[in-house]
Length: 160
Image 1 (cartoon, rainbow, N blue to C red):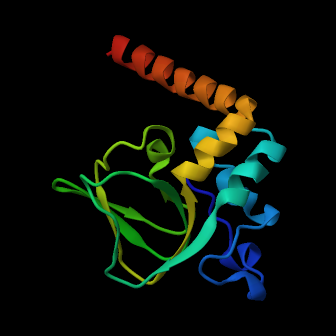
Image 2 (tube, rainbow, N blue to C red):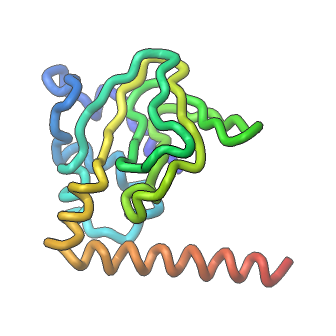
């Protein structure tokens, strides 16, 4: 579920600033995201190029359940907790959340709160949709990945 790349590898000293565009070298953080599993390196680089570095202080809400989803996040440094009802799920460097926001822009099903100061890669839905319009092969690949995931879930539930 996570890239687990050393932060030093992701961030040359001059590329640690909030709002900075993601470099091509940073596409490696997206390699382990299941939604992007079947994308070519070229297409993965185009997705990574949409990302922006964003900092959050400790104890800051990154996303809130019930609000409109408008971005996908990969944790580049720091720790957070997903809060969904009574469930608490810890997240750390390399983990990600909000991938469905890229596709449907629906409401968030959970909140994510920074436990420590965090640096994340944020990929905005609006830019992602424009990329899908200009690169339909990305959309086709993602649809195939989602179809595979649905079939896997159906097979699992049928065998139970």
